[in-house]
Length: 287
Image (cartoon, rainbow, N blue to C red; front, top):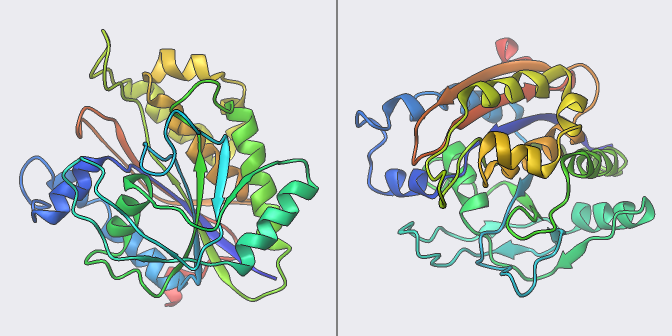
């Protein structure tokens, strides 16, 4: 059966992609942020994943306000990026995965999750920035990617508990797949930030660190929050915690937190990085 090696939670701020494009990683503003990523990359490379499942939110490139699915999954052999207007250079095509994706789709519908299936879709910075963070220089072509978009822009949005259960259903589907693939799950976005309105620039460090603590061993505590709680405590874009919860829902059993970093402000955002390894992960010390 397919094996989930662990989960990685990371920011997907567009400015990160711009900084990488311009080679600014070691400048004073960015150095502390980017210096946190090599340990996660090393772990990721040691696991040699065949497939990465990425929970992200589309920011208007593929889905806009006129059509916004609650949950959408890609089932295409390839995904392309396009100009989003953020100043990020377009990246090379992302390799898709179709067989496991369709297995997930069938299992989700069998277990009462209706999902939009996309056999063509463009992927935005919510997915491309994490890929370029983990595989600098666009060295991700050998990895097959399953993009899963969660609505975090247009009300009504799925609540935290629903996103956690959604992740659980996907994790169960992956583990039931009759193959020997190694899978890593990404939860992207967040943490606290607000881009507009009277609270533009709002960051809640204490709440962000609380979420990072709870997501390891007590994620159910976070599922008791509503989206309005998240907006109040973490800003209007703080609902992106739902992607982290979906990632955490996909993991089961005893987890080991292998790495954590929190940095602010990066583009008016509390930027978190967290690595949770399952008991199936390869022992890095033996690599």
